[in-house]
Length: 227
Image 1 (cartoon, rainbow, N blue to C red):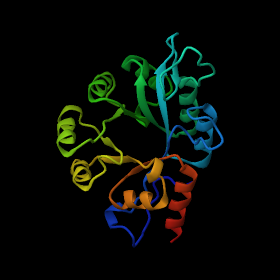
Image 2 (cartoon, helix red, strand yellow):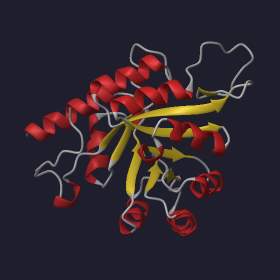
Image 3 (cartoon, rainbow, N blue to C red):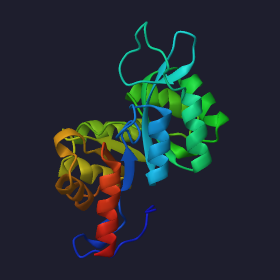
Image 4 (spheres, rainbow, N blue to C red):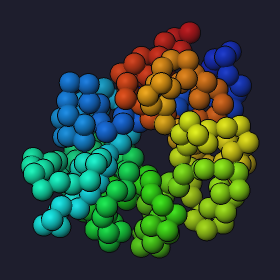
């Protein structure tokens, strides 16, 4: 299992020698439904650093896992608490996409499973400010967006990690995050979910990569370690 191991690679500068953390988008869902407990277990088994999940609130107030809006016919959705229990036992971190839930409910669930210090939470600046005030141990993760937006966010939230995607993963915005000593977690999904894009992200300072192909990314990092 490869977790934050120091590499000595001629391909990268010394400041980029630590491999990026592997983030399994909606769990390791090859052969499993997205946002399912099976996908969570699969990610844990292959040794990812984070499992990314989407949280929403069901009609009865239960926090459940689903990316899209809940529909009246939805049944069998995984419970957020059950996923947290799996991650807590395995000591695997959580990358949470905060879709629809109260900050209070999120904090209560994270505390119940001892996950407040092992979760990064993605959401709007306004929601993250409320969450950070409730429990500063939770690592809030705003979207970078632009140089100006990120500079503004830094003064409001004081985050330790910032999220990027293909729209804002540019060298000037990355430089702002690096100057503030933030972790840089970037989505490499869709057309960007390949070895060339992973290596490019790593070489430009990404400390975490979100992927739909966690097994392949882990294999790449192991090959680079051997090289």
